[in-house]
Length: 111
Image (cartoon, rainbow, N blue to C red; front, side):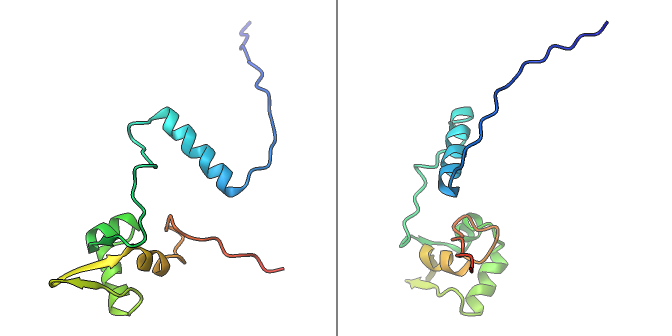
């Protein structure tokens, strides 16, 4: 006879807010692989100026998308001695409707 051993695992139900769930997931990831994920050290200064490449990488879009948003006036570049940079807060506002944007702010549901 082939007996399989099973271990009972207790099941708990709880209600978490989105923020609490996000924090819990981050803590678990840090515990499993702390050297790969360092959420606290990442600078998220809204006034920081980013290059096109940095902006594209951070907001998970292509450089062409950054150029298109700039051309369409959705993001306004800052010019410093002929070098183009983009303000992080402007990029956050422009990409806040994108589902891939980590800075997306959930909209309130209508009653």
